[in-house]
Image (cartoon, rainbow, N blue to C red; front, top):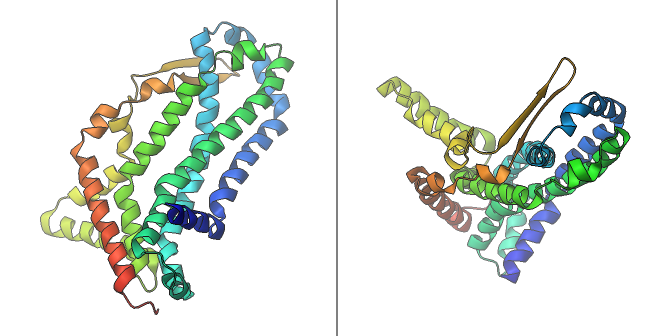
Length: 304
């Protein structure tokens, strides 16, 4: 176990983007909030009457929305970091010949490949979660000043009603769902990184594109394209109560438009997700692809 954790630390040392990207994105969002303090305070003052009329349950939406916006923004940028990392991690060690050094150590190919998979499935989501909470709370502190300046009690409208544990539970559930659902995509990218000698990106996208084209030409269907699309974005209606859970608030007039969603924990819907055959089929396919990536790294020629 200690050896595996050491491999994870090695990946973090070599790929600092996992740390720097969420810090930069979160910090920029907080800085923008500070720079536009005047406009935010003016908007709060304009909507003063409608905000004070909100019930406590509705006020909780403010905290959920803050954490959610940081989580979404950081996750979008981290997605690109993870995809580039998976395509490069096993390929780069053959390009710079460092694989010869790593193979001289008493570390199995399975542990090496699984540590890189863990970076995408576990470490990156945890970094997104921790960053969203940290910068969300930091933004709450900034908003405390804004609310006080607008004559709105920060404890009454921000901190008091906030359901931090429900929000954390939702975020943890979301990152677990995303990791399990995207596992076969991560595994495919690792396999490509292990066997491609060059043009790794093309190797990752051309085989699926060719299969989609052949299916279209021969059978005039688009089943494989639909499966890929479902694997990329299809988890949301399957794992979340979209449109039925939570409490939505809309405050609208000529100059103010606020739309928030509270009770994120009520959007959690694991039943259909865990009972979906697509989930388990994807996990089996992902496991086979990971086994193939381990085999390729173990037996292929290290030269490029």
